[in-house]
Length: 324
Figure 1 (cartoon, rainbow, N blue to C red):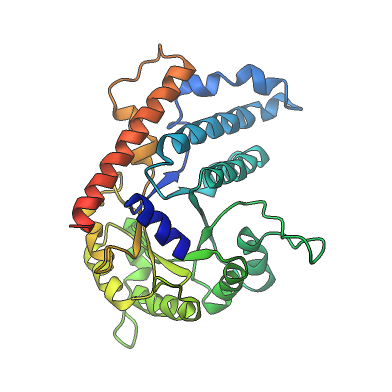
Figure 2: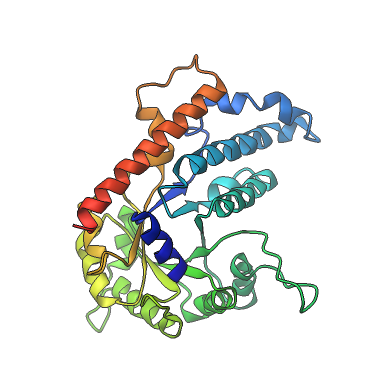
């Protein structure tokens, strides 16, 4: 978490770009441009649609990363978008993470894993990689992530393997606490016998899970996911969780604003990372400059231009609201 905070400070921008490509968010001419190239590389034409989309996703992601790498500290690829394409998609997920890391970005893998025992430990290899062949070698890291998101529904048994793996590899986890989706209240807002809400109890657990891993900047390697669409609860959670760094989804397309998230930062303007996905990677669709007559390269240029401007606008809005 110290590395993340320092990356944020370097660019004075507490935002993260969600790399969540879908067929609707990638210009169609970009997808079409890879048809011939992919056709020669697949064993069966049944594989063609997934393989073609996978290659297009990587080119799209690389375009976004190149456009924003100097103004944002981090990216957050959502693994479901890639797993939906099968093995080719998983390859593109890891390639995207590796490429972002090579550009100096903190990579937050949005994988939302949650299980116990050996299964949780296996999922935790997202963080600590595959054991080295000898003590003289480093572990093999196939995922290239600096952090992952984790579901706490199974309690401490489901979190401890991730904390141990994160500590071993000097990486982080972000635990779901108060999420931005409307139906989250069905569980998270339930009253407990002691008067707390479920999400408040989870918040206390998260603060405790990270207590032994607090870094130089005062935050542990166990972060919390707190939605931008719950500004008052987020403000209260900031006071309740003084050593827990927040990942804040729900900005932009889901309705959260810079003013909504301001209370989730600490008095020094630290303590939170705000995510925008569609608002940045899909900004080209609202630019008014798109035309079906554009070539694939021209469409990618528009994607880059629009994403960069959207990322700059988000940065500036957050600077005004948080660093005032």
